[in-house]
Length: 283
Image (cartoon, rainbow, N blue to C red):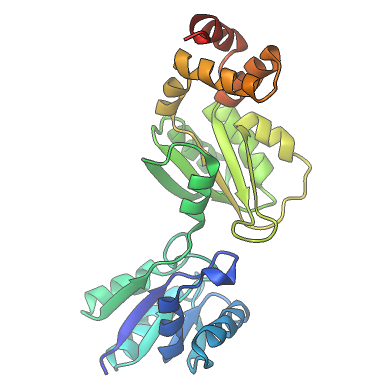
């Protein structure tokens, strides 16, 4: 049998999101390279339930600290005819997780590589945010240091597309506050515990979200979605603002409250929304 690398997308929270194809690949693998063997063992129990037998693979760790050495070892195994599956604790290997070096090494060696799609926090949060999703950019984690972090935010302030970021739970409030300072008033969403029982998606402007989460003990993996600069002009289209106000009024909000809510959500002055209502509410 010829060797092969299977890059296996894994669930981001709900184990029911493991695909049958991914389960078969993990069942058949000779070696499973994973971030954390404890997490992998839980996943393999789900595989056993789906395919009726426990995977026979040897588990080896594959993470940022041992990626170079382990990639070379795995390439040798694949070249010798073994089936290697690469996983991450959650999501797609190589996407803000180690993996791209191994894929590149296998390609360079002329070895077979297959990618098995799976759940993604990037696309799940993007769709759940309600922000435009036709064009977006994934920025992964921001730099941790102040100067580099600020430079990246300044760059993102000019980004036209919807922006998707990952952030650790203990830094999310500070990140939102700094983004509000650098990027300005933008609509955004914070998604946490996606696909899990306590899934939550909170929407508002960057500043509002920073205030809301300040001092709160945030748990679980966090994905932040921020509107692009080109979308601000769309948000200020008067007829659209008037339609949103009308929708809130139909839902029972007072006119004054509806105007304030739309102004906050769209990041525009209340007088702009008020004028849009005067000009277009009767249309």
